[in-house]
Image (tube, rainbow, N blue to C red; front, side):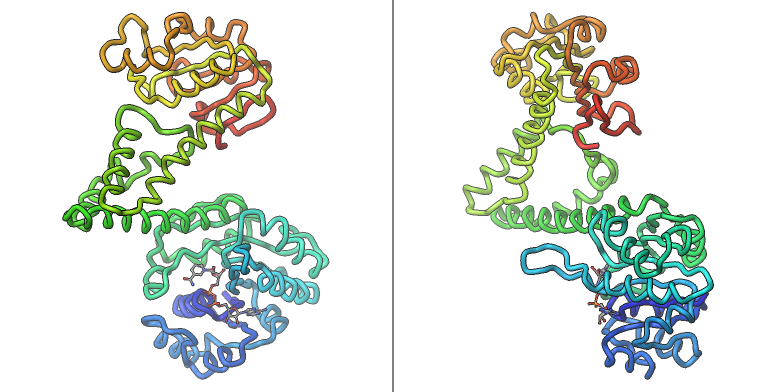
Length: 437
Ligand SMILES: NC(=O)c1ccc[n+]([C@@H]2O[C@H](COP(=O)([O-])OP(=O)(O)OC[C@H]3O[C@@H](n4cnc5c(N)ncnc54)[C@H](O)[C@@H]3O)[C@@H](O)[C@H]2O)c1
């Protein structure tokens, strides 16, 4: 394929070199003459292991050249990949001026081109930027409609500097944000030899995936550092601890606990997090990540309360009370806290939980619930139907057989607050409100 790569920075230089290695012909475009000249001299414009050899080889083989002329690059190629910088402004917002400038230049060149052209964004841009900003800029300049008159896609880059070439050929995942099918087909052919099946989603989701990945990496680093700090303060080897944590691929390094939903609770997580933070304070180690986990959990509970309040309903049905399905453990269940808060504000509540039977609660479990919901025996009902009877809104707090079909059954007649995403594909609409979907 004949491809133009806009921006010869860390991403653009590696992308251009790897595409050439795969047999494609690349025109690299940059406003920086020094970089343009370096490429044309067969030199890598950035320090990256293995890049010098790839660029020297590609230039010597006539597959790579550089220019500062975007019109010439677009006219000589069928697909343009945008890799220009998207730096932070002083206030933290994202500066998209370079991607917009390039979009305008490419659009203008498309306006003067007969053959269909494809534009693929690889720069990191916030969710919505393609649809709200980049595509309108392209369409204005090209005088056409994206997806119809020219192709567009968003293809987030996940490479890491210093291992960028290895990452290019062995990515953890490949994500394509789709507008039109033929641009996706072109991208599929570009990555065919990598051997990873691309995940194709809409462009906004692909933009969100990139930010979620980087936020996740940042959170992991700070979490590991914090654990290391606490461990050092207690003469434990934090590397050893984290190595063991990472060896559990079922609960720790896995999708477990990684789906958006309601607050955590139960007899362990809140208690153990509190104790660990207390211990850290006694050895003068700050734990901002663990502190934030507690704060975020309280905010998620507030969020659920406000969602219920905003329905205007006063008589409520609550499905679920224990902290997760298939247990009757009510200790520190966020649903108990939600129920307590609603009752305190004068809401009338009927609660159904197939795992909770008042007469069978004993020990610490009974004690806990008595101090939070002393009238529980009067609030509990025996079936979903009893719970729905007279309810002006329903809160689904548990994903189990009792909840299945409830959303369809109430069919938009009764507002539903769903804290567990009882139907995997359901998104908030009108009377159905998912806590974070
Ligand atoms: N560096 C990384 O490890 C990495 C990884 C994944 C994603 N990203 C994202 O990729 C994008 C590029 O990052 P980078 O580190 O390669 O940036 P960079 O700053 O190294 O390079 C950007 C290049 O774009 C050029 N440029 C600016 N305006 C231009 C224009 N109008 N026409 C042509 N070229 C122009 C600049 O001269 C520069 O050479 C950013 O959005 C970044 O967030 C970076």
